[in-house]
Amino acid sequence: MDWLERVAELRQWTRNGTRAPHKPLLLLYALGRFQQDAEGELPYSAVEADLARLLTEYGPPHRTTPAYPFHHLVSDGVWEVRTDRGPGSPGTGVLELRRAGARGRLAPELRTALRRQPSLLGRMARVLLDLHFPPSLHGDLCEAVGLELVPAETEGLPAVPRRQRDPRMRQAVLTAYEYRCAFCGYDGRIGAVPVGLEAAHVRWWAFDGPDDVDNGLCLCSLHHKLLDKGVLGVGDGHRVLVSQDFVGGSEAARAQVTALSGRPLFGPQAGARPVAAAHRAWHAAQVFHGDPRPATAA
Image (tube, rainbow, N blue to C red):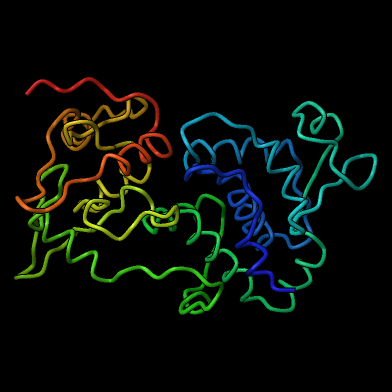
């Protein structure tokens, strides 16, 4: 049984690039718990709170319930559920899962495979991360689910067939924005080498975002992370959007985040394509949290 292919092909509801990371998040959470206790069961009452936090932070903006992946992941052959009455899930009802004492864990065959081949866990986690989340979030997400990945076990993965990133995108995007953060204008260098500047995908590469300039922004490391977390976005007129859900009382938070609301982007230079409306719309629907703040007075 090829476990890497199985986790790469988790059955998910999807339509027109809609994000549905519920099963991947639960499976990453379960892999993290397996590292700590290979035979321990995960009560729904505990998973519910933890997965709700993960969905809030790493899921799409619309509300959802942890009950769905807890029940439906069984159908993918990587997860099992038991209740006080025996094997099997009582369904997707939150009250039923609580009352039945539902608890889940990785499927027996998968637990056996992970014990026999310890590196499999890291490789499975890497497939889930690469297929469902941008690289800027991988480290934070692993920490959130308690996963400790050994780089040597996940580097150079021939895991599953997938399209390749275009290595030329970074240079093209940084050039288009003249090596300056499109949100704040940061343009630091050491000698001739830019430092802390990255090419960000607006529509995530994991969700068919192309490696094109009109799907990219040159951003400093901070604002790249905030774009991928849904704190920042790009609105009509190519102005910065700041989520009303973001809260920061310090002067640094005001200057680096809330004060950006409504500001025009820095760049791109004449002749370079700005972010396409379709990619801005995808980010607004699938990543950006809540409503944007009103534009900040200059």
